[in-house]
Image 1 (cartoon, rainbow, N blue to C red):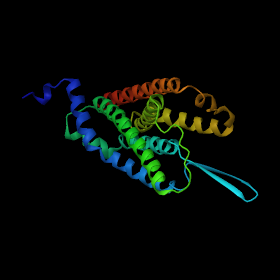
Image 2: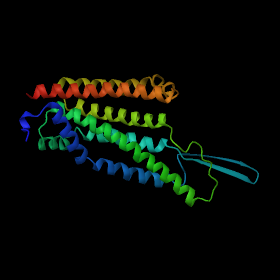
Image 3: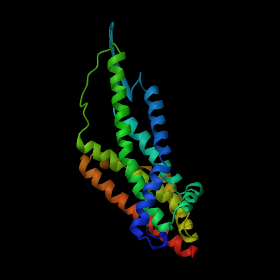
Image 4: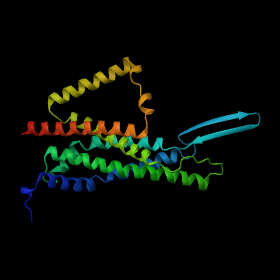
Length: 242
């Protein structure tokens, strides 16, 4: 048997990923519950609706799309990533040999894995909702683009990864050295104040209109940047702890 003290850094990360992926699997259960709840709430109305009437004729349109399920999923990813940095989750690292740096890398890999699984759960919830409508509703259904394109699938994964990275960075910023904590609070306060004073500066319309693959690439770059910052903060925390 290989001695635990002689394990390579790569082996330690592999063991941590397997450990954490199983240990934190309840997070995926909470996502399924959220999808079921919101899917049931939006079953009759959809994610949007509009009506038209003329004389004795009234027409009501209800739109069912993937957007609502994606919003729920990215919110779940953000909260889950923050929870990964809390004391209760960090205590689980004591069950296996780890450092803060290796733990941060393992957290990132688990979140990426969970992002892929979350997309599958999200798509399953969407198709179950559509199937339920087809079986239960007597109204006419106009189905447009029922199958999700590969570019949309990739965009969903990248979106969830991005919010996971933001949540993880947010959590690590308040777990690192005092300098990082102060800098994080100042930057957060400046961001909130600038958004309130200059709301026109926050214009997401330009990004939304980008092609799916280009938007995915932009999300990947931001995710890599945020994940790298997480590892850097974890490494600095390790040094300060020593």
